Picture (cartoon, rainbow, N blue to C red):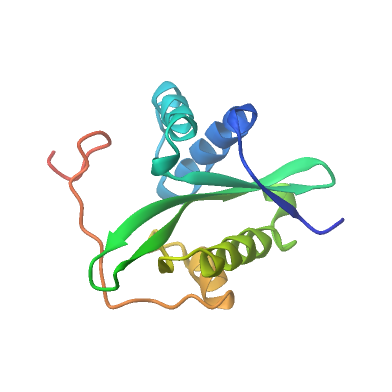
Length: 158
């Protein structure tokens, strides 16, 4: 297997991203996402670059993984955090450095981009494998917990 090649995703990658996002949600959170809404969401990112970007990892010409970056302004730091989201590595490519290559690419790009003050992500609290992966690439747990009200998928208002 050759080293993963990382590139920015485009509209031609949309169906791969939709499948990856749906598989990730099912595997990590046991959520079955509405594929039409998800597809519209993927295309909406391509239509408005201020929302973020997707990166694709390819191995031997095959799409092997994905990562989305979104942006959060921090007044405390007078800079922008890049949020890592929608991470997915195809099962056949796991354990082969695909996530590490995606993360390394994004980390290097963030460090070269003026005004970026750091990288963040959130992870499902029971996903010990992902947490260990993030720690291996140098990320650290924070003192924060996440709260939300989700108007689309629900947030415990039942």
